[in-house]
Length: 293
Image 1 (spheres, rainbow, N blue to C red):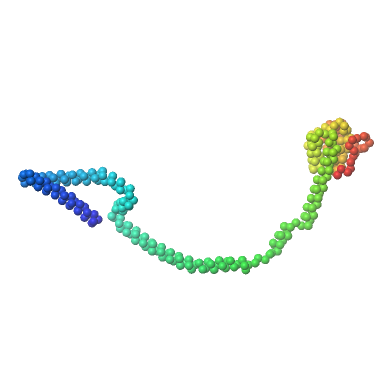
Image 2: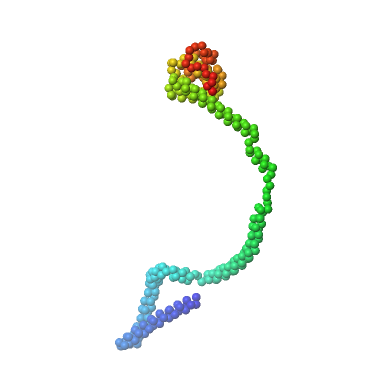
């Protein structure tokens, strides 16, 4: 603050001195040209007033116009901006800044103490951690879990029993025998009726026969018309042969062929078909065959 005040006084003295020198030079000039003393002093005062007015006007112009322009130019430089920010801090805040600096110093000292303490703690705790890790690493070597009876019982229960093995084997054999029987019957159907049915009807009949064998109920069928060479007794013999191979009851077989070959058996009732399907007294193309399957 004192330095700034001194600078202002020095600047004003220089300005006033310069004005006085110019006034004295103006007085000496008019005296040189023969003016009287009063006029020369008047010229001194007038020149001083004019120079002072010029200085004040220039100062106002500089502050209002030139100073902002020059400041904007200098503000492009970072060093000048930092200097400006520092100089603009109010004087009354200096004490607050000094207090903040002292507080920071105290905090930094405390942090250094804390860091020193933490380092010491880490040095002390590291050996304990390593020792504990070694102890933990040694545990698996010492602990051996013996097999329990519960684990053994679980393993034994997971294995199939002798009954289950025999049952699975018997079911597989039964399934194989059933499929083999069906294949033989389907082969018989194709070989026997290939001359009396077209390919589409023959394949459809094989599907009906498969459903008839696999299910205990009558399959949903559509009528199949065979060649006129086959008579009622032929269809009856055909039905008896496949029913015998499948082990189906006569009534169930009679119902099946009555529904499938409704055109050929339109004059025969189911009871009649059941009774006559194994007769052999008439001439026929399809013979009774007990050895299909």
